[in-house]
Image (cartoon, rainbow, N blue to C red):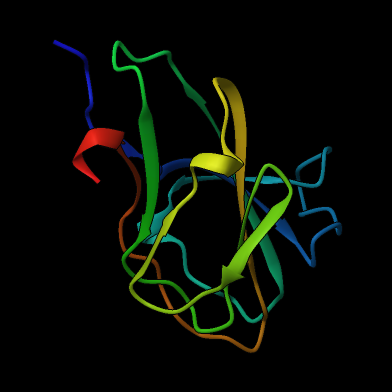
Length: 131
């Protein structure tokens, strides 16, 4: 039986203020964000980034759907450098063509003028024959 479990993307994010400005106390310009759901906008523009890996599935064909249940109004989501869309909540999109096995990067750009918080963010693998 293949493992088609939901892949949580809620934890282990890194934030970059104004997309490039170093965060005080962090030499590489980043700050660790243990939980995206606990992140709070402090009025600056931010890039939140998280790496994740996908393992081969036993299924012949698997599609991946990205779910973002809540995000600040101006959030823009990218996977592996490709812009998915400006955020509309709740956000759900087939991202199969945007991800690959092994290393992937999801980034969310949030404007400083956009108050808001995040809900769950996850990938759901679905066998193609169930679409």
